[in-house]
Length: 335
Image (cartoon, rainbow, N blue to C red; front, side, top):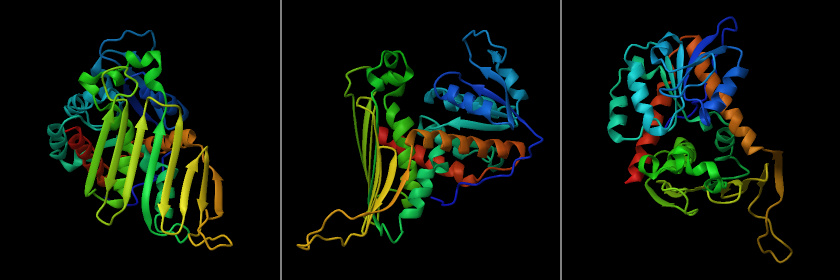
């Protein structure tokens, strides 16, 4: 995995990227809202194959998208490859696709066989690579205060599976999206871990339906080990109270993100009067709003894509390759 992926391009403020968006709810709605705030792009069309919505930009005519500079695909996971394939036939613009890229190993192989010129115009939205969390991990995995990292724990959960709209959403459909929480949420943290530590030597996946609602897994627990002994645990659930916690445990200190606060406890050799180990003092503390940081990372990711589109620049091929590597690992876990 490559480091230093977060690249910022200078945008020509005189130009605007004409965007088409496939999808209109959930993540698509979030992206539409962000696009409306970015002055260097303009949404021309919002496409859905069947819905009839009385909105000027809304269309059921796929051919209209081909007039755009870039297309955003923000639809259920199993539809991604079909839309990419359709756009590659006659569309010369840039493609932004939500993660995971695709839902089958055959589709990954098809993407892998694309010519370099096509790959450099396709961007998969692993937006946590553009996050403050990514920068924080990069800064502290070898810092003096933390020492060598032993383990990282990601714990993100909320109670969506108990809301009425969950049952009618695609996320609860086990026939098409059995591993939806792994594919849409856990994948972010797995990608971040692999980005910094390389390919796992061992990985165990424990999925479950804890809410008893719907037929797809609402809870995912990943336990990962790397060649040098580092471990990562990732617990995500739609069946619990809200919790957002991250901990990075090192040989000399601990980084904790909890209750919208990031703290570092260090050094390891902190004792009481009996020379027993005690919790090290806080040597660093700062506000860290996890929900807000997610939105910022999405903004950064989208801005990177739009700047590439406006400046007609090839996107970092390592972005594409790493996305496929993470996607392949997730699909192997399905089995």
